[in-house]
Length: 160
Image (cartoon, rainbow, N blue to C red; front, side):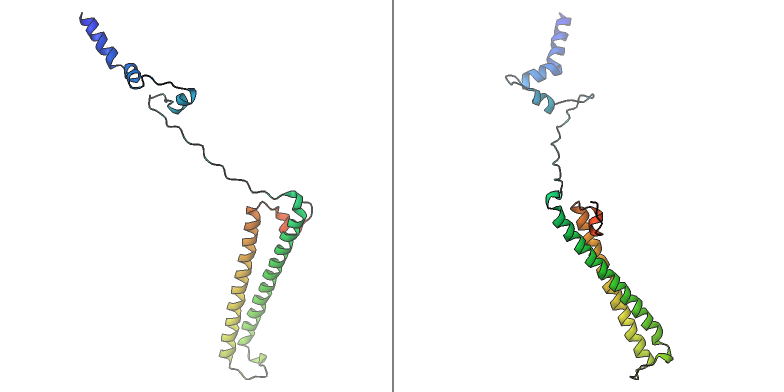
């Protein structure tokens, strides 16, 4: 008699009877089984929603020649701008070096200090221009990279 009483208590307390009583009358499908899958410890693993994939940006190769010309012209123009800015910086630095030299006196009689300050302003201005031009070129390269443009297109190389 005690054995029957203990067995009935064990059956009533078992997880199987709990599941049967709380989900009585429901039908489960395979998707429900995946949704409520348990790991080895018995804990329910929540189903993770699928992560959205980022769309891949591609350049259509059909209009590639037009795109190639665009990227080539933009890249060439900005590289020319950077080269000119570098030349201006070199020229301004030469003027700054000559500003303190009394043998390079020009027709106008300007003090050495004024020539020096003027040359320093020109050097700063030229360096700012170079900085901007280099950043414009870097931004174009980054934009081209994001749009999957072959690197040779910015350098006007054929074969791509």
